[in-house]
Length: 624
Ligand code: SPV
Ligand code: MN
Image (cartoon, rainbow, N blue to C red; front, side, top):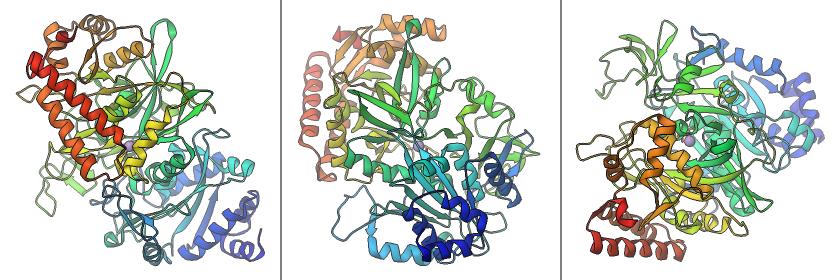
């Protein structure tokens, strides 16, 4: 170790912590730590290795500091984020870019030099009186072609505890490999108020320095803003992946079990609150991950891994009927952090849980009773719509055995889904890779819900459900997807799903449990074992195949009327959608690849032709 750096570390962190760092032979790491310890100026430092003893210390710290409180069931704890710190803070999240860099209007950025100065001023001395936890993790399975070592600095024991559930341990990986090209995350919750929530709201910032691969996050606690390895690392990894020819995606990874014990793995990208976690947890199938995947070309195949090893899922709406697997886990002892739900006498309640809501308790707004209004006169629900549960996947009975396979799993299909009340059919397959990338992935939209601020039912463009995290221009990202399957003999099929179709009265046309059937159909399609109907917008199931699957999977009679209504091709809405998407690519995405327009135009032409022949709304059987 460099002498000066060694001296700084030794005097600031104590002999025991220093010994732990000496085991890692990486001068860049030592320098990074010394620089930031001087900047943050914590009163204490704790270097966490992979031992159970150290992880337990973090767990206990969260209780001692009051950032988490124990609940009635063993292992369960509750954490509250500030009332205005309940979701990803898009406004204050920015990429730091050198002068003259243009990432386009969808990707917020600010001048790198100014941004660095601003955030370093905010973070100067921010940890006075706090303990700094230094944590090592590995994104993706350890010791594999997918692994990315990471170091997290944080003064929040809640953040540290959450990450110990969500990410693979990395201290041994750093010792083994030196942690070459590691990603760096620097977080401070800043001053806390009496409720243990961040006080200095005006100084909240998330600044992403792509050049040094450092993310700064200050004066906030909500996981999406603070858990460095989640969406902050994802932004860095998207950038790296685009330079190295692989993909970082906002995707679950799951196994769909086909006939005769066949296992087919699917990834799926959905914007928040569109059923991503619940799809990956469909009964009968097995889960590898519910949020972020890395995909790489290996041995002529596309292979994927779960970047994480835990789950931080939305709890709203989880009930015993629709989500039996997660329901059981949430109601059993085990290590689970609940956030922003209602707590009454040590028991938790969330919107949509079985049973009656309690009349009072404590939630993200403080003491709560039914009818409570916030400062703006808005009624405070018992739990926040974005309230979450965080756990290690090993708590799940349906965990797939391939989670830690260093070579990942072969991806047999890719699914995109959004919240769409009137256009897409419940499930369809693209004509091929490019058609899928353009008309499904890059055309993804989702309607806003009551869970997000602003008007409901507004369609938001969200290519690959990844718009919030893109660290390269949108056109470049799409080109990268188009190129990705080159040199792969049988690339995964691309599917689009829509769980949110409504009838004219506004009632959903499908049950939540129907997705189990769509998954089985996609599994069969990915092996060419059922036929499909060729419509202008893609390949859709045949009635007989779905009828059989509904009987087998859900023991339900699926009628021809339901099928015809759900799978009719809605030509006016489909054309309007192409119009909206084309406009965005023409006016807002300067670097749109030309093939995007070509494929969208061809789709319009097919729809126009079908309209001439069959009218506006075309039952699927017309395409027999
Ligand atoms: C999402 O919003 O997509 C999440 C939760 O998975 S967060 O950690 O906020 O990103
Ligand atoms: Mn997510």
